Each structure stands twice: as C-alpha cells, then as structure tokens.
Length: 270
Image (cartoon, rainbow, N blue to C red; front, side, top):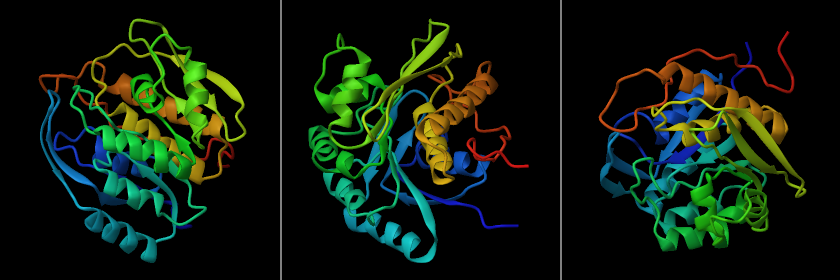
C-alpha cells in the first residue's frame, strides 16, 4: 500500500471540537490523507462563542512548521486562524511551489472577532499573494477587499483574485434551496458552482472542513472545479449527518463522524 498524501494545517484549536485544527485533521483523515499540524492559537471555545484566546508566538509556530517540513513530504498546506500579523509572516515564508489553501478566518461562527485590522492588512499585503487559492465566505471577502454588500459576488471574487490567488467564494442562503459559489481560477476565468443547501443550524466548522477537503483533493491532482465540487459534497454529507443533532447551546458542530471515499475526484480508483 502506498503512503498517503500529507497535508499540514496551520490553525488555531477549538476546544468544542468543531472547527480549527480538529476539523482539519479529521477531514484529512476521512479523505485518506495524513494530517500534520502547527497550532497558532489555543481557544476556549464552544458552540456559543469564543471565551478566551492564547496566541502562540511566530517563533512557536515557525518551529512547528519547520519540524514538519523537515521530516514529512508535505503536499499541501491549509491555513485557518492565524491570529497575528507575525504568524501571518510565517505562512508567507513557506517554501516556494508548495500549494497553499488559505481559509481567511476572521470571525468565528458565533460572531467573535479572530483577526484584527493588522491581520487583515497582512492577508492583503502578503498572505494572499502567496496563496494558491483562498476560500472566504462573503463577509470575509468583503472585509478583505473593502467591497460593499451590494456588489455582485463575481466582482468581489475578482477583487480577491487581483491579490494573486485563485478564489472559491463560498455563499449560501440557509432559506434558499441551493447555494451558489463563485470560483475564479488561476487565469482569472470565472465560474459558478451550484449545490443543494442543507437546512440546519449545526454548521459550526463548515468553512474549515470545506477548505481542508479542498486541500486534499488539490494535493491529489484534481483541478479547482473538481476539487471544489468534491469538497462541497463532503461538507453537504457532513451537514446532513448533523442536521438533527442536539449538541451545545449555540450553533452546533458539523459532523465528522462518517466515512467518505478517498479517491481523487479527477482520477477515480479502480
């Protein structure tokens, strides 16, 4: 049996187990990848909110990243909560050519702010230029670009692409039957992906889970559209599993308790 693809997450913890490093590592494993991690911050967090945050220093994060890269054949890096501009600098120093999927975590599902103006500036000035693809929701994209809520999502996605990366702008109205995502590939071509919405409030961790799944599929050689489509299918299955859960007092966790096929969506296994 061949060795699994290795994916590295650089993100914060979620003590409630729904998002951050936990979501990334479980998603990597569910899709047949070996997960490694570099923790950027430790949060006291549950479904109601983020109650306390301890930021690790850039040296702490760099030591973790260096240890992994010197020992394991990392095929892709996925980032979540960076927390400080200094830690953002660690991400921009990743080896050239190593694919980087950036989930720009700025606000938690509960509404807690996880990235201040200095972090937003670091994304704009440095991180996005290094990223292979960025996967914001609309609120994050508006904050990164300075666009307004009335601007068409296609224009917002193009504005993000102007910083350098491909874009998967995730969107969805929980009251609508479908979700519509805007994808801008590396050449600037714009496409939309529509997929069925899942009516549930158990969605804490969906952004992390989507970006982690996207990272694995890209590492296996899928193109952006195929990888995004497969990642959405994974998240939809997770949401359907957790739809009727009763966990926590706030927005409940998305499920990570189900098996998924591990093949590359662009090259199915025999």
